Length: 85
Image (cartoon, rainbow, N blue to C red; front, side):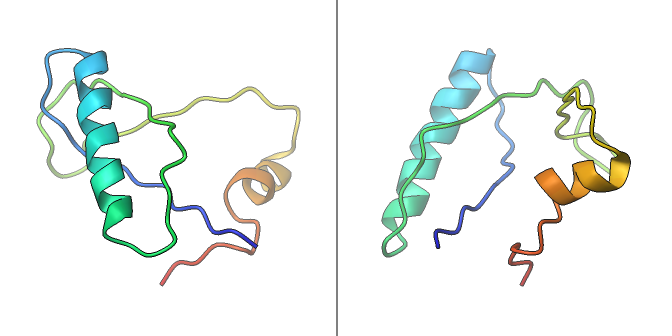
């Protein structure tokens, strides 16, 4: 079974395209430093409206779903297969 790591990184950039380019370059370097790890070539950008600090939102994703709240969390976030340590 494959494991996938989701990472949130912060970049100071003039555009989403620039931020994604920088993030992709860093992701490739990150994977090169690890054995048998490859970048899946997927990156997203989120414009932060405030300076990073206590309680500042650094990422947001909204998804429409007919799943109940518990089923939604189990389907997308708490499947039981996560490695948290």
